[in-house]
Structures are given as C-alpha cells and as structure tokens.
Image 1 (cartoon, helix red, strand yellow):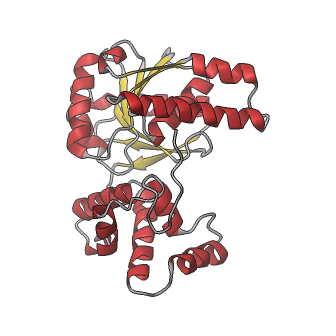
Image 2 (cartoon, rainbow, N blue to C red):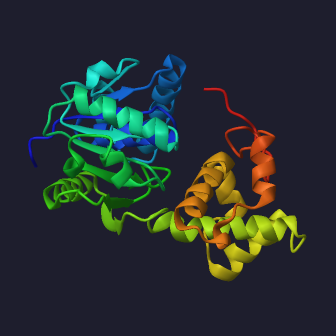
Length: 288
C-alpha cells in the first residue's frame, strides 16, 4: 500500500488522539503533533485509558497495548512531519486555519505524500487549492469515538486523484474501518443530514415543544437512536455543531440551515457540552 509506515496526525484533541490511537494499534508509527504541550499530555493519558479498557475487555493484550504506545511519538514541532508517509489533519474547524496549515505542509512534506483532513464540513477543494498537490488532498472524516466507530467518510475534492482515493480506502481497510465516499459539498453526507436534525431539536427546545429529556427520549424510543440529539450535541461540542451549521448555511445559502439562536447563545456563554461541564445537560469534568 504505497509503503505507508509512518503517519503524521496534527491536533491532539478528541479526534486527533483517537485517530493516532487506531493507527498505532494497527502497527503504524505515529507522530502526533500539537502546538500545546498540555494537549499532548492529555492525549497520551486518554489513549492509555482507552487501551486499558480494551485490555480489560480482552480485546487487546497487555503486550499489544504496550506496543501501541511504543509506536506513538508526540511533539510540538510540525517540522517532525517532514519524513512521514501520510498526513491526517484534525485541528480546529476553521477554513483559514486549515488552509494555512495545508500550505505549510505542502512545503514541508515530500511531494508524493497525501495530505488528508478530518474536517467534518469544510471544502476539500478549498484546502487542496492551498497546495501545489490538490490531486493528493482528500477528506478522511472519522467518527467519534474513533477507536469504536467503524465509519470513515472519504471526500474527493475537485482535483483529488483516483489513486489518492484508493490509497485512503485501502488505509481504512487496514484500520478495520469502512470507508464511504462522499462528494465535496458542505457537510458531506454525515453532517448534511445529522446537523440539521440536531439544530431542529434545539429549535424545538427553544420554542418549548419539549424538555431536553423529552426530546431525547422521543428520538431514542421512537426512532431507535442510541443517543438523543441534544445529548449527542453535548457529546460533539456545541461550538463544533455551530461551526458546521455555519458552513452549511454559508455554503448552501438555504435559510433552512440557519443555526438556532439558542445554539448561538449557548456557545457565546461557553456552555459547550461535555467538554465544558455544561450544555443541554450538566457533566462532571474529569481531570486528566
């Protein structure tokens, strides 16, 4: 598979550390990079806890756990990615920030290296245009929690080559994931459908149609969803939900994608869900 042995993951948040873990578990050497050293410390702690749970459930041996951690290297310098064979970016969901990173990666990495993004909504074509290798830029959108969820959305930009898409699809198989191709439209498939549902649930709450418990219970018991939309929004992060709704609204120009005012207000208040301790529900923050 094009001799991909060393993978670079940029961004040590929830998605980045999950992506780093699954690659390391499958035998790849992983370089996890984040500008903030504390984020890297939290990521390693999170990965260790995740691996320990697999060991407890007999899904992983102690030796496999130790081998996974031995294949994971962390650092704050992007220059360490100069010799990797494949890149997955998982930084903040902001187009300008991602474009600047892809431009930097284009000059840093070898010309044949594929630059992929874990973006959940931003145009892959736009990211590719920030480089001199748009044929080697694609979307690789993992689902959260990455170690447990099997789906990976593979997004083909306007200039992405068939060879690059095939490489990403083969990587998914190697990781034990199912790659599903999506066209480069705002939100792709997953969030084009999911986020408007979450947004509508927030409108229903704002308008007094039901309480958070009632809205979530209807979707769980009536639609057989494993998690209600408001609980799911808290899990994803309300700031992330708002960012994706803004991408849908701006990119598609349809008022049906207008973010709910309550969602905007909660994000402005810093009530972001699980990660802040308060969203539609309250949570006990766990110190890493």
